[in-house]
Image (cartoon, rainbow, N blue to C red):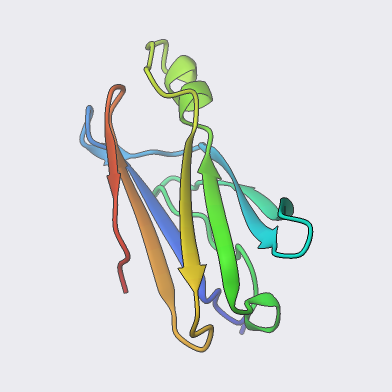
Length: 117
């Protein structure tokens, strides 16, 4: 059985009341010495709006991370304009032994997020 990722996400299209399937996203970690973002992984949300396997426990270390959601491309694929070309959620991990869930609830002109469990 594959190990589950310590970091998960779930993207919901609040305009249509459905999961945001087929949205591209990427995970990055800040290099605190160079102060630049290093890409760790890329993925696409599944039919349920989730992107499993973002990273494994061994590579999940304390630091600053960001999830970048390609919201503009998602809405464009639905033939709809949007205000945000992408959404970046930046967060700090100090206890990597915990599990973290970063949901994104979005419409074409707004979004919200929080730390889930």
